[in-house]
Image (cartoon, rainbow, N blue to C red):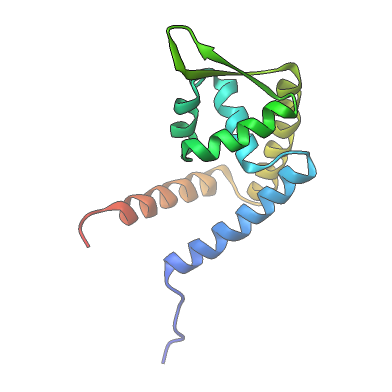
Length: 144
């Protein structure tokens, strides 16, 4: 009789939790958090400057983003201003302190990624990416 293997979804979920916790810890030690990193990245790319666009780009609700932006603004990391011609929309921009935090967190993100990739060849990493993409596609497939 063969030993029972764990369902792949459970293995991936466990792995995702470990990676997420460790990534959050690394960001926290560098003075950040996952939501801050995602917001800083969206702003740094420059293609999302409207508050509602940022929320959609990073996959959180508008009210949750507002909470994070309020804190980031009070910490001097971002500034908000009303969009010309539309008083209900707000533009968000990084301040010099926000730029500095982005640079600091980027080093942390790169270091964490290097840690994850240690011991894998480029070919193995490409295979992992393909397999994860296939898992995501299978999970969202309507043929259940």
